[in-house]
Image (cartoon, rainbow, N blue to C red; front, side):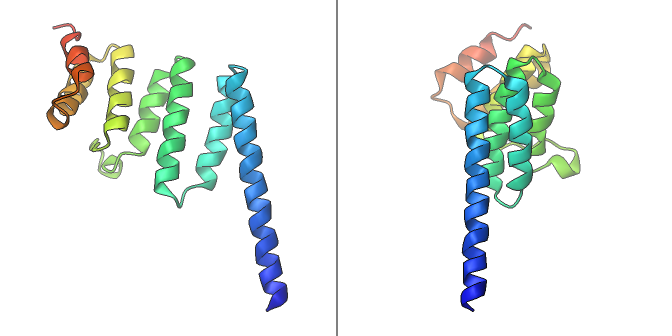
Length: 142
């Protein structure tokens, strides 16, 4: 029993050390503006965190921000769609304000004004007091 417990504690320590090393690597890549390396680190962190949906969401949002800085907007949209609850059905259903705002911004950058308008309209509907979403919706060309 003691040997099993010691083995479990050692395994947890190794996993924690691995996570801390990945976080340090991510921070240094972002600090050096090496977003390509940051995306690689985030991909490995997302793969290892598949059981924790909130952690996957947060890591994916960081990945999207790095992808947008690399002007890989289509990849950013695909990453955001991967954390959407309706992705399996082929329908994008986003009820998370932060994810929907990132998606709307990505659509605006990509000049996909119909989808951007849909996202911003949804954001205004669910958060009518947010003036930023109303301004962004008004900035969409007719």
